[in-house]
Image (cartoon, rainbow, N blue to C red; front, side, top):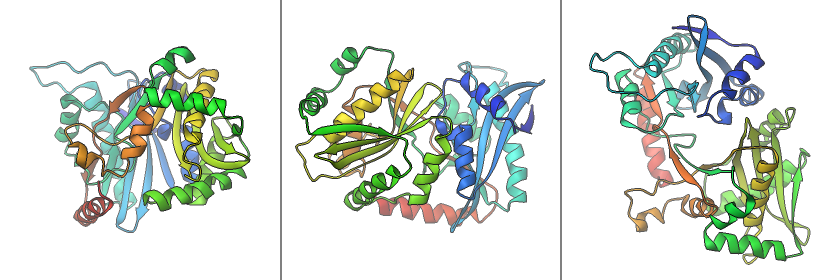
Length: 357
């Protein structure tokens, strides 16, 4: 296995187009967004006998708790074959790719004075996949940044079939939204509408008490995906006033509901439901096969009383109402490289507890 940096956008995007498990966090445009935010990135390709087998877009994070390398939703491997029991314990192709990549990242981490490498995999949460990380010396991270559980909707159905598969209440509210002549959904690629979104976003932050992205972050994310027509702002307006908004990314046949915000001034007006349905229809018009609602709370093996206290309980219920299925990825993994990592570990453990997760 050989690891080389990829500097050609076409090579990068063409490889990813042949992969099934992927998100926009490994897209070329997301790397450009990180550059806009002043970040340092590496686009690594893992080759075997000249054949590109996997890619990993890695970012340096300079946080107050210490510097580290971060690989979000990667590495991405082209349609990896399921791992089968092997009595000779020959490393699987996925294991060999990850091992080669980590060896290269250790070198970069040393140059950049990073205390650890953090990997948020896009690999299905199975015993086999978890064992690969454990065998290579990684451990479960105390905190995750990107979704480890997502809710996804197959768009290869008619609109009528999608509506029938929804929760009864969700379907009813969408229909009520259509009947309300004062409720309109607009689609925009005007950067000024990011400020409209941000106004609602800050009110959503006040209501749900989560750590928000900055206005510059939102503007740069929008700007990074705009040149390739991969982003839209949706605005739900009632009597001319914006009640809900979302930023949706369309990339390689998948639509991602990445940012959302709303106010509750008119609780009987189903603005968010109609907005989400229009985003789903737009994804179908663009030829997307999948709609990714992004993260949801983990409801398995958790008492309902406790689950209802989860910060994302209401949002998860909203997303699930549109039908679809859950995808669970291997939990975020850390590869400690310095004693400084353990300061980060303790800090993030306390931070997680304070947030109520």
